[in-house]
Image (tube, rainbow, N blue to C red; front, side, top):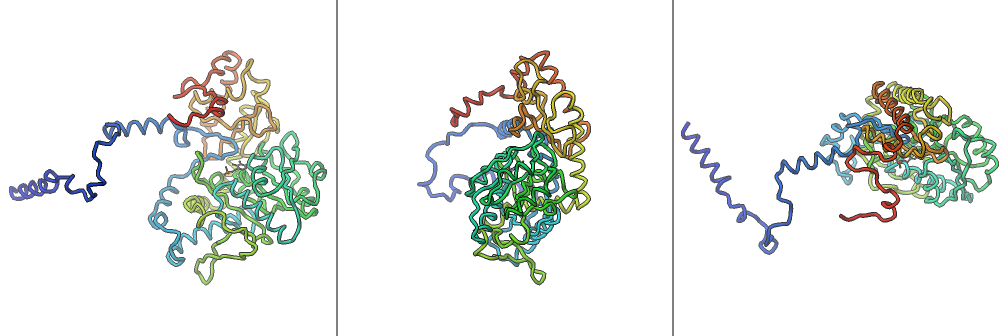
Length: 474
Ligand SMILES: *Cc1c(COP(=O)(O)O)cnc(C)c1O
């Protein structure tokens, strides 16, 4: 026993207590510091508490309900994160040879097939990094298609209810934007479309269900009109969470579309990404897709560089945001077709449930039935001088993330609510209850609402001042 102790002690002394750290450093003396660095002198525990406190000032799905309309902030299964961290995925290098990354290539191959099945399209590129990047890619495909046919088509029709990225992507892709005025519920009228249709129109961008949460009523007719004009139909698939397993853009007559994997297929987003916006096309546009794509030959997965003359080229380095693709693939495989359909049905039920709890408190311009989200207007329902912005700020005092406000632009004093399928009835009840209370409070105590939030770490910010004179340094 004594011997062991002695040995242990002497080992310890020689290894730890007797070690002269300075003389053991291999860094050449001329590179060593001459003075103590000017960093805060804090204990590790204090630093830990500081960063934990900071993280709690943030809003996150893991801490609160996040009904941010248009963004589909659903619960992202934690197990997907765990799988994405497996060494066999996380340690792979994109320059490895194909034989050593067969599993990763198979994931991409499978994901492409699954997206085709859900959407009714014939092929996908997984490269784009977000919805807007997908729009740009899809529009370049449309542009390249007409170039190959030697047709000069310079215009893209975009409804006035569209997400701002639609006209921006059309401009960025070299097109001129023609605005199409939508009906009161945000839907499109074939008659109004005909009035603005000319031979220069390359295509129309449609969001379905539209940004007011209404399923477009005239898609077959619109598809017929556009195709008869030689023009194409682009489907903004950001709202795919409403229709999985129920309806497919490819069956409706759309030629090109994007899917926001970070919305519908449950990969964490917000704060700028990462995301993924795969673009799907009908078979006649396959050759225009970005390269490389993943193909299967003799039971081996390979990269295919396709038709270099027709392809729009590479839209993102290597394979796109692979971890996002991986998590989306796991999500699809774990839910299966039935699970995906259930998710969409439940998303629609949850949104309709909140709509019904609130419909007597506010106006619902698109009517009392919605898909996975709805837009309300507070106009005429709030106390003197109180606006939707104030209601959103007051929701922060109650610990909620505020819904999207003032979008779409066609609804005055808009608030857009999207609960998603992953929230419980209790959460929906509590949220509707708080929102109703705030609307009542706006009449009984308008000043409290106008000065909200008062319980958050910072109060109401001067947004105009912040935009005009941003203070970027402390
Ligand atoms: C979110 C969204 C987009 C843009 O997608 P990002 O991934 O944020 O670039 C486009 N259209 C609609 C309708 C959206 O909701």
